[in-house]
View 1 (cartoon, rainbow, N blue to C red):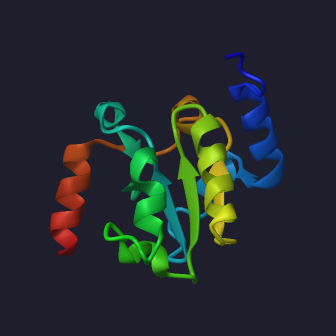
View 2: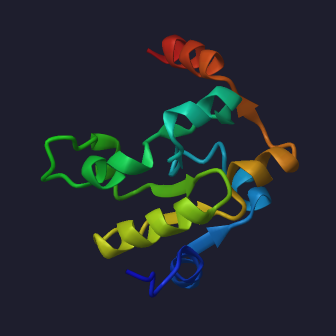
Length: 140
């Protein structure tokens, strides 16, 4: 069966419908308590680090973690006062994910243009998984 709408068309559609922030725009909001950065990359991609303070929600579980009716729901996503800014490796999966969350009823969702690759290219702050665990332990 031939593909009638390829990934590029899906990503382009999503990009036209979701809020997209530059790395600089997100960096300026890293300490804003009303912003939650969400890393939707696969767990294997985290070995290269993540955005400082990002919450990891793998793309395959995102809809389940967001939906309060799901047995997998994460209460973090119930905070309507937060803006959830998603990122992936290059900005494609995060655009698709942000569109899906909008379709689920979330209006407080956006994504980072260029994803983690662009974040690294611009020298924005990152942390290793070990750093993240230490930071979380200090908070808790």
